[in-house]
Each structure stands twice: as structure tokens, then as C-alpha cells.
Length: 114
Image (cartoon, rainbow, N blue to C red; front, side, top):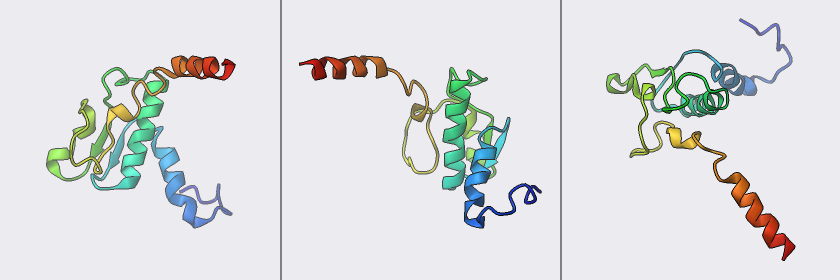
């Protein structure tokens, strides 16, 4: 519906543009085995955490999967990493991502001084 806004953009970029638009949505519906859906959910996790939106404390978000039925609400609750790991993103990917950065920077500065 917005092709008139991006008439000169190479069509190979449409999937990436879809991801950029989708990750800031209030609600996202994706598919369980999709890498596009997985990346959108990871970016949503970063966005929700950075902006302290609902779900940032417990690693949940308003994302759903169409199928399979047992996975529809998978992203509505915190789930630790488990197998198979390739089907979805886990909150550990975006929660506390910067934790320890200052400490590491200080260690590097001290090492450089020596």
C-alpha cells in the first residue's frame, strides 16, 4: 500500500523493510519456522527492552504464531532457551544485553595502561 513512497527501492529489500516496520508494531503475528518472524521478534525484544514497554521485565511481548496451535502464544511468556533453538528467539537474546559492558571497558582500559 506504500509503494508510491518507495518507488525506486529494489524489490530485494522489501523483506527487510517489512521487518523494520513490523518490529515497532503493537502486535505481531508470524510463523513458527520463519527466520523473518524470528528476527522481527528479536528486534521487538530489543525495542521493548530499550523503551521499557510492557513485557520488558519478564521477556514477553504481544507476538503470536499462526501455527502450530501449541505455539500460538509462545512469545506471551518467558521461556528459557530450549531445543529446538532454531524455531524462535529467546529473551536471553535481548535482556540485560549491556550488562557488564562498563566492567569490561574498565578491564580493557587497565590492560592498555600496563
